[in-house]
Image 1 (cartoon, rainbow, N blue to C red):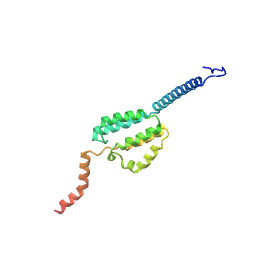
Image 2: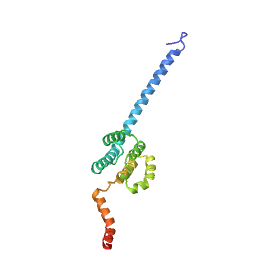
Image 3: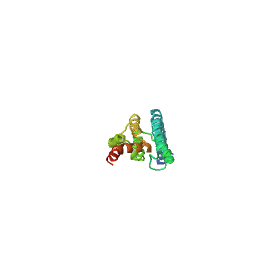
Image 4: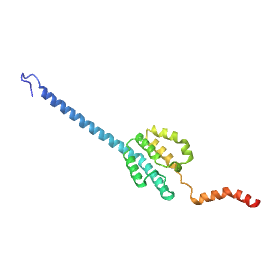
Length: 174
């Protein structure tokens, strides 16, 4: 490994040392990345975000079972996809972007009129979310915006009340 004149290491020896240092740097980088991922996952689990997402999905699935489709697409595949997306979200910002896509899967007629009027601001807030707390607040707003369409009995009652005055007038004029 030493040069023929005995004064120092050869170019080959320097190459081995540099390769070893590079390998150590790669291993250290991988370990740091793994630790950062674990820290982020722990923060996600402790933040309550996953429970908030599960509540939101449960409410939507309940609406599906009681009053017909609230979603665009297959319910079972949709629910599993979003469970995975939210579990592997990692950061509040990434989860915010995922919630935007999640909201796009919900039929507009299942969202309250107030929410639809404020939807642009809600989307803007979600795009700039920085903390899990902010994310939970935005997810809560979406959860509260879900509405169940009226049942056929309620629609019949509303129609009856709407035409009743006209019907009484028509009968009295007969």
